[in-house]
Image (cartoon, rainbow, N blue to C red; front, side):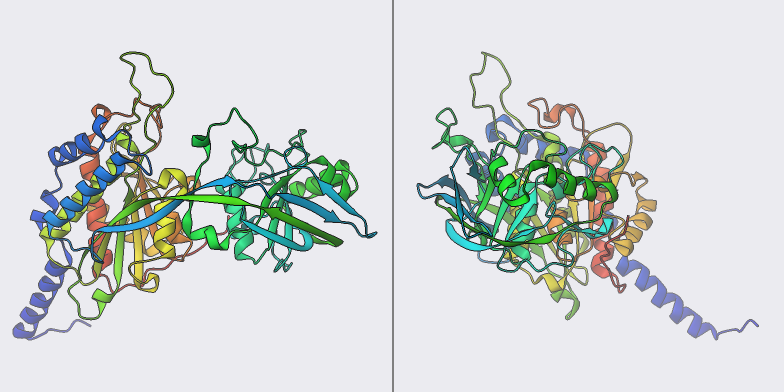
Length: 524
């Protein structure tokens, strides 16, 4: 049955709807401010030879940081603290002189192992001595989306964990982990971080014998032990983990035989795990290990660049949407270069494109007025080193993570044909993805959902690990990826502008929505 409203009530409702629609739509001026010529101007500077590839840390990266801060200030965005810089230290770790490894056997005897020949510390190791019982935890992986957890039913608190390198089904194209490619779950730093989270006191890594016949302990080739390795080859580590570090060593065949009886016994265990993706973790009864690794640390500072556009609602402005992109790249060739040879990794697509996107979206917000929630813009350093900038930010946030409602990330958004862009993280963030899909009706990009395998490979993953809904915009890899040929002349500035308009519209709506945004861990 239809009912009729008095005309005055009808006009009032129409007015309310119009006001609602107007206040929740960004202004045309803001949208039109995202222009290809602005994209070109910014990218020609950020990816120029003068910045020498923006390595972390480097003078070129510092110049880029100053440029970003100047742009944020010009747009009227404010720093979250005293300045736009969030400084953090990177450490270069050198191996000290006191390194020892011994095993106490069930019969009361002891076995000592020789450094380099029978064990080798990894670059992640601590300056520490530990003695503890041993627990075997398979590959040392916890992957809830695959229903796989080597730590599932076993308590490793205060124990030294023994783990296999790599991941289950390493040579199986049908493996749920990334087929024959090593996923982030198989990376050593991921395994070390997980062991620390689970309370392990130390870690002993052995090669997985089913796929790797060489059981030689390589660990890290420390310059103090290998004279041909230069000190510059020592990688940087993130300073926030220094106090949490545990001894981490790579052990060889003699350790495997001492603990498992034979290499064949360990291989049989590995085969059972790989056959059905069922963990096989257990305590190594009556085995105790003593590990001493000594390190010397040199620190060097770098910075994220952070700015805020404050929200307008008295309560909701205490919440924030984060928009991010990493602004570092990989520097330049330090080997001998022929005259006229290009030696600078300009990183125009990776990731000057996303950095420019950050600036374009920031300018659009400054022209659109203030949404209900605050919006935080972060240019991350050290992504190429291992998501250092975003990992540091979520460990030392400038805004409470409990009040951070979503994060969108732009990484490599300037190449490949057509208007296609991959939306990564969509399966983890259903409401945010729905907003993005609906806002694309106004932009017209070809949205692809084919990149979830890259979910852990850019800065949004640091936020996802904290349960924050995320989306990651990416236009795919190409032959110039991490090559000196990734230059500004190959960038599609029009495509970047379109993606920035979608990012802006999605972030604007997320900053105004009354809908709860959730993060989920899909089961595959």
